[in-house]
Image 1 (cartoon, rainbow, N blue to C red):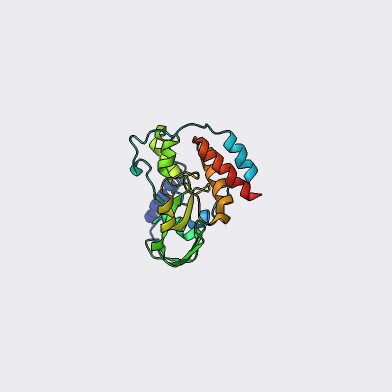
Image 2 (cartoon, rainbow, N blue to C red; image 1 turned 90 degrees about the vertical axis):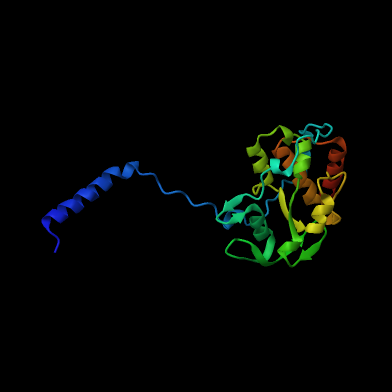
Length: 221
């Protein structure tokens, strides 16, 4: 049986809780889920990218002095145990299964660079459309670390693609005038993505790079 004194104590506690409620911090908002990034971002149309290219500074590449991949913190945690690489593997793959650490343990991936189908995540690289070293030579050498981190983990623009490890390593840090996908059917998307990323981040282009991008954009017509 609850005594009258106990009732008064309960009422006092409830009253204190109500009084303090406006001053208690709201619960943290949960991190975004995989649903936030299920679709590979579509770059703008060719004509829009042509206009973006015309607005970019054309200059020789900057020095590589001071560069390292560590200057671009990448594959950061996006939500839970899922880092940027795992998010893109899930987004760009078909029938992807992940373990409790968010690692892709099964799935099928199509590599648009070389028109290959891959049956294991170990065969897949996540390519930065505009490579980190190329960005460095194009103006990222002057960025703060936070901006380089955002660039290296950009899920909102057409910067990250799941491709075959062999094609990614063949590309390296080369610009389109030095390397372009052997699968020419992807040239339209490739040039639109590359040009748009350069525009989004205000990076420069070389004249041969711009000329090749314009030629590749012509394949969209």
